[in-house]
Length: 98
Image (cartoon, rainbow, N blue to C red; front, side, top):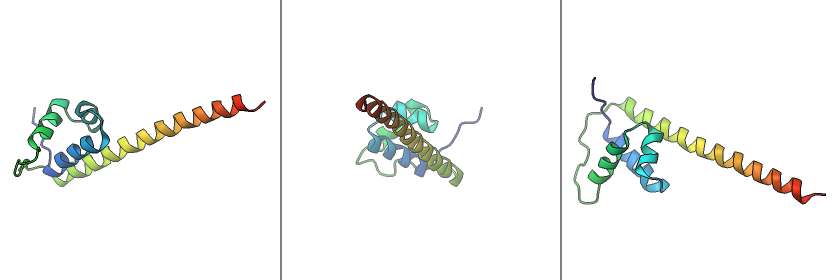
């Protein structure tokens, strides 16, 4: 089996997603299709003071895939939030009017 390569840009954006979202490495890794231990290693390698953490040879296609997966994760979270909010307000309005 050929090992999958990820571009430095993909890795940086995955790390940024972990930092911005407040979610665990495992949760973000599963959302973007990366092994959780791999994302954890990338985060560790990208700690301040590490120069040129990702000298890899990924392709631009990897970057586009990463961007699309992030967008899908964001839209999915928004949809779930809006669905739950709609259900909450529907329940509130039906119990508040008599």
